[in-house]
Image (cartoon, rainbow, N blue to C red; front, top):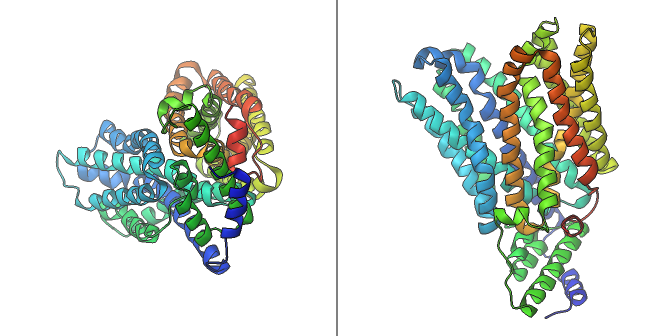
Length: 470
């Protein structure tokens, strides 16, 4: 076996100017663009139903249950697709699954054009939207690891955070496009099928992308990893990260050979092993606690504000969404300068306090409560940005896909609980107790992050996973 130090030196010398810096920069721009495009498509698909819901209700004679099935289809699909795609991308590779996932987007989007009328239409649309949700879940657990494994450490947080901005923009663009087409008299099948155009563009753009060197290293395919690094990787930090991962893998292989054992492949059971349970607990728990209160409050913003004597409209959904988008943008701009932990932990404590004040101060002035809700939306969105960053960083290469997929799926439980439980809780217990419960969820997330959230700014993925997985 080659000595790690000699391997590192050989790798450094072999990473030559085989391809130009311009080529490598263009590749990185392309990779970022196709992943951000996928997240834009995620938001677009989830948002496009809203503007044409009335047309669908009339044309298909939908009742509330049928409309709920159609709306819930993608959420169920995300819950299934995230861990399944995560397992597949760790087993079969980032490259093939990244293309398969967009292929599923393309097929499901195009299928919407052919939905029939009559009794079977609801089932058809619910199934199609379910598979779209599977594809959305796949974007989390395939694209995130792939982007993190090619991103320079000094830019990795910013690039991963951009994906959440793309989701917000996609959701808002769906509302704009859907409303314009609806007002122009466009049939609803054509409106919801507009996602096919973007899916086709992204599918073609993903053709020919290389496999992740980090994944190849986990499979012992070191020569292929080096060849891809020579061709596509420009950042010295990234080349250092690749050599570190290779050295660690060679050490693991040597230890396994000495003890006459084999290195285990990725599995869900490994996420809860003695070595990785803290990583799984932090990423899944943090993500769950971040999205549960927000999904509830943002989804029913008008109802929540009416409970405190304020009208909805701009002050409600638009105001909360705008502040959330501002929170994400602020975090993306600061993440690689200030670090992850300082943008994660304090905001959670603050949001827990905000919700607690709303819950216990029954006679607070309505305008103050509005300001508090807007502040919650801003700071919550800020640390929720880290749900796209931490899971892609703290899991080791052989578990990165399945780990991110599990965390994303677990977070959907929180999103569903928040969305479905909030109206019932307000009507049964009132606004005050409901907000206290929401504060408790945020507090749990703050405690978990205070305990486990690492600082990963500027560090290679090999360094992070080595420190965090003991």
